[in-house]
Image (cartoon, rainbow, N blue to C red; front, side):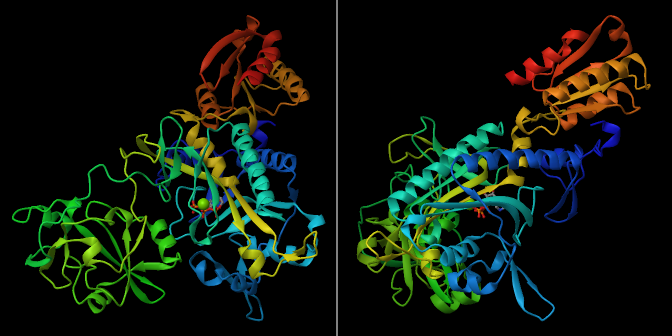
Length: 570
Ligand code: ATP
Ligand code: MG
């Protein structure tokens, strides 16, 4: 491809809307353009990278025995009602209506569609296992689309769905996908690591997310340096906070006046001097229109995913002031679980056995001291609700660290939830009707593209791994006169490398050398061959490896061999 024949609109400055470097580089390197929030057009160089990632994913899915299909993006709402997700996913569903006013959904994911197909097609154990995948556009009305392709409203996902006869077989399918993901990210030239993921309210017991380490990632991962523990913070558990929870009670439960106290810190201060670890924090949520209480230690925070698991639903929200006043008879600052009998009260497991604690009295301006949890809060359900903090010990006794990462893929053993709901079943060897055990496996193709940039760039631009580079070699001709010696040499090398199977771009634009070099670094071709009149007179061309910025003069007749060996190495 000649640069002058394609369309790579590079930008000197990043548009102000791009907050993170990979988003800036996507735009600056002319890979994508924004249409509206979370909606992007892929330009010629961008689509080349996208297709290469898709191809790697396709090869690894095929190798793992998954079968490619393509499902409609437009889905009937009935199947979402049947699975119970019409309400649950309401927040992200794009709804459209046809000319007769009938409602349709733009698929954010395809469990319902694939299971409907399975219900019609699968009837015998002899057909199993089956694993179907597709590479397709997904639609999600994200509350906050941002960071370019990272959280888009329309994006490309590879999604796969396995159907097995037994739980054990389902685990084999799961492992195959897990292994395929390891290979995919490896081949895409990006470091990834699997972490234990929250199986959420779906109750699956096996779930891993694949993460790319990045400061700007939206996920937080708790891990230990020896590698014995790695989990999404949503799910992470530890031995508990570094300071002990008081468990000795020296007096009777008593109310005391706390005028103006609104926060945990207010009580820590003079004249009260109650340490945060001796306080119980009381949080009120609305779950299915009912107020529900969650208690955590004063210096802890509640983890939303753990709350969802405890509540049995992801649909809940913090209660409003009026709702709190009505339910508790007091406002935040003076709330507590003692004496609450009409509402469900969940308490973090840390509070089990706690004694000598302080909490609100459900009377504005008053608290209770000497709270003995087993005596004064006998009605609570203990669950792991707290967010793990850096420095705590993992269950195995290693120090936990926390880092940010980008979730690029998710593998999930689902069980029979969807097959039950959508009546997919098969007859087993004994003629008994069973629901297939499902797994689902999502991989964000467009998010991965941007994660590679976030992971692999420098001050000058993108550093594409060879496997996904839009073009692996850029020949920068510094004198573009047609028929001149530079263009002649450039075209010869171009022909030879292209014939060998490399993707080569020939920068034949009539621009200053410095400008062309900058552009090639910005777009991030792994290898560049600079050909200029002066060095060519000495029989040389200039070879540059993007990853190390290592430059050297190479004799013209060795240039092709040099490129080949460099591309084989990186
Ligand atoms: P997140 O927690 O980031 O919202 P998710 O749990 O909703 O992701 P899944 O439903 O597991 O994501 O989707 C599978 C993959 O699709 C994710 O691992 C991610 O790579 C990609 N993905 C999900 N949402 C988006 C989005 N809004 N934009 C781009 N890619 C996305
Ligand atoms: Mg996920």
